[in-house]
Length: 240
Image (tube, rainbow, N blue to C red):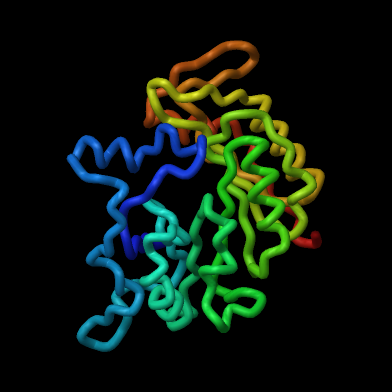
């Protein structure tokens, strides 16, 4: 697994961005997150060693996990990234986006029905964003589609959008003042995924996590641990 951030910086886009850890970290470092700039890793996928082999190994590549691959400020750089993605057919690139409304304006001319080595995750946080973004997402030409409900800030229904989705990931918010994540909401989405035979992953709890009517204040290091201990991840049947 590798990480590739060809640019850094982002801009808050919706309610799910309220306590964004990228913005909080930049404030501590005195960095303006709204400045979208190329990084030294821009050409990382195609850089080579002296023997001619690629420096970045084959396998899964998390793309733009500290920004948004479809952000407007990167329009002038994205075509070059698509060329590198196509060249590295031995890698599988995965990116998440809140800006799925921009997708058709951001794909390369030879996209067709999608690149085999690209997975796109549509990020949602409440019913409003689920309905707005997933109604677009369901009709887009993408080979591998994922949904990420993180941070989940209210109970949502997404079953009608699960056709053609490979997996759904759910997680809470990390912040002292984070909005609560109710375990019942997580289980609700899990049941929707089971009915549609879609993979489900409970990625992390929230700082303020509510289960059986009791609110738990969790430390950062326990968010993913407690989600794993819940042992509720679901793997779809191969014959779906």
